[in-house]
Amino acid sequence: MSFHQFQRIQCIHQPVEVVWDFIVNPFNLKKITPKYMGFDIASQNIPSTIYPGMIISYKVAPLLGIKLNWVTEITHVQPQQNFVDEQRMGPYKLWHHQHLLEPCEEGTVMTDIVSYIPPFGVIGHMANKLTIQQQLKEIFDYRAKALQQLLEQ
Image (cartoon, rainbow, N blue to C red; front, side, top):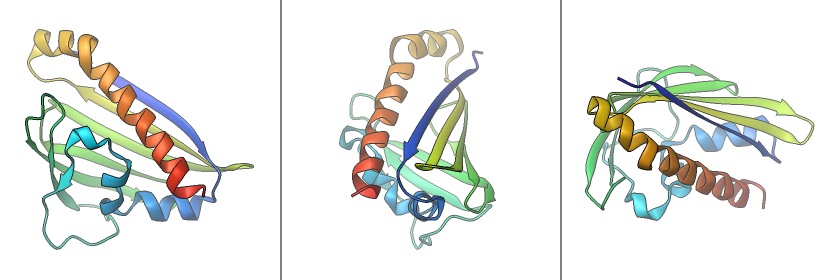
C-alpha cells in the first residue's frame, strides 16, 4: 500500500467570499474539470451549496474513456476557510481532498491537498508513478487556469 499526497497552491485575485461561493457549489466542479474526464454529477436534487454529510455521486472517465461511479462525502466545512471531501466509492483505495482558503493582499490563496492511495497495491503504486501523479497535475493545472478565467474576469 502506497500513500501519496498532491498539493497545489494558487493565488486568485478575488476576495475569499467570492472564491468560497464558487467552490462550494457542486455544479461548478464540471466547469473546472477537463472535458476528457467526462465528469457529470449523477446525484439528483442536490443543493447548490455543500454541507457536512452531503453525499455526491458522479460519473467520471479518468482513463481510456471508461465511465466510473465516484461517490464523495463532504466531511468537514468551515465556511470561507476550508472543506474536505472524501471518497466513499470510486477508483481509489483512499481519497481525502482538503480545500483551504486564506485571504492575502492579492485576494485569496487557495490550497488543495489531496491524500490518496491508488488501488491494486504494488500495481497501483506503479500506476501512480506512470500516470496518476501526472494526471493529477494536469487536472489541477486545468483547474487553476479555469478558476482564473471564471473568477478574475
